[in-house]
Length: 113
Length: 114
Image 1 (cartoon, rainbow over the protein chains, first blue to last red):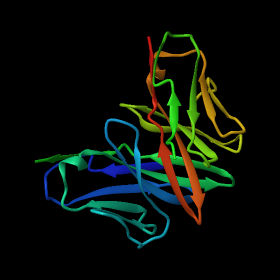
Image 2: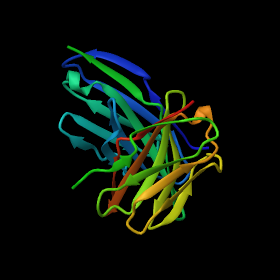
Image 3: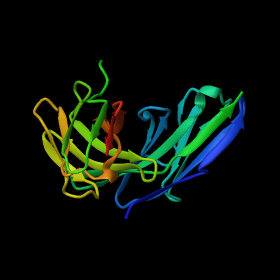
């Protein structure tokens, strides 16, 4: 059974801090890893990673994938209160034409002013 | 481009009833996936449709079914509702090009089963 584990479950930091969120996965026929941000609504897509060692960046957010050690990290630098959200990672596998996305339980990030 | 739309946004049903939820993907997106989100179980994959064909199904009972129409709009049906079906049902449309995928979620339908 596919499994995605995120850590920590929750994190409280102050504005300006840098945070690192972790996501490990055990997925058969792994294809890609996706990161999402969820506030009090539907998840918002952040990144999709398919190759090891290639960092993806978007403003203060960056993410990298390690396919040998089966994990990914999401970094947020110079955090702001607007970064407070649940961050979800999901691993996608392919089996023939069938695809499935397995989500982790999320990391609740709270950024205090 | 308009985003993913879901209707209705909120729904209250009683046990034993059935419900149909609708999802319209972003124009040009042919893949639609459905998820159930609950506080206890998190986000769980229900099924994915692509060009009117179900590509994959998650680990849910047969009471959960879906379909996709030729215009890529999708519906999800839950029959014989149980209290445990109360959840936020999210649909997402996705587009792949050059090996890169982007997936966008709709606002969800919040279902309460009494």
